[in-house]
Amino acid sequence: MDYPAANIALDRTKQGQYFTTKPGPYDLWAIEFGYSTSAANEKEETERLLKIAARSSDPQLTFGNDADDMRAAGKGIDPRVMINDLTSDAISYSIDRMKLSNNLMKKLKSKYIKEGQSYQEMRNAYLVAAGEYNTAAGVISRYIGGVYIDRSFPEQKSAVKPITAVSYADQKRAMKALSDYVFAPKAFDLPADLYQYLQYQRRGFSGGNEDPKIHERVLNIQKGIFAHILSANVLKRISDGGLYGNQYAVAEMMNDLTVAIFNADAQTAVNGFRQNLQLAYVNNLIEIVNGVSFDYRAQSNALANLRKIKVIAGAAAALADADSKAHRANVIYTINKGLEK
Image (cartoon, rainbow, N blue to C red; front, side, top):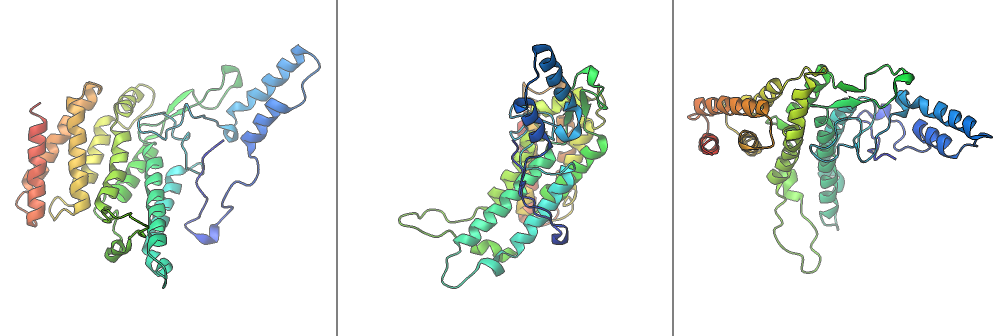
């Protein structure tokens, strides 16, 4: 079975079915193997089952189970074995998903504010849309350092090799999508007054801190990406992949991250989302430099990028507002302190 997302098209003129409504090619194949009529004798039955199983290299029958899936950060290697994705181009699909979520969030007030009702329904809708955004970002991240697996036997003469690194173009495309929709200064640029209406409905003695905690919510999305692409497993795999076709090296991947996270506002004010993002990234790099589970290549490149960031923050230390100055000073302090260990 799979855990697919609801198929909602960004362009409604191209809307297909929202959900799977009948068994797919893999389902029918598995049913044929497990439940079709057996042959008359053991030899013929063995040959019959081998003939059915030999179709496993058919792209429509691609299969991975929970042991292979990539839902947890750093787990699994094949990005096709992922929950809540659709299509053979999950990167483009997930970009559309994030655009759709943003479009929906911008319309929440006009759709859900109604006389005689609390704002709970609107808050719930926001949480669903923000959750879909987070899920789509996670799907994209799995293509960075990803490896496609083909488990067919030699006699099946599969057109692909057993282990194939995700193409350089697709890994760069995934990083570009994350840069634009998760790391950019305006990645979470929603109407300012939307947040003022994200109030839950009080029921009984259910008070507490009603602040919707938007910065924390956004940072958790960003940290979720770091937890995967900067994990020891993925960084080691990117390096190992260079031996069997991976062209997106750790040095380039980390440099792309640094550019995405620091360059856009290097000469301007740094908003709250980016301040959190930049310090979280710096702390991840420090953890890599000082961590025992990371390989030397990852540690070397993490150190090189910390030095780049220190130069960027130092060069811009006198720019922009007091808040941004304090932030840049904190970046430099955090790097210095982290490298003392």
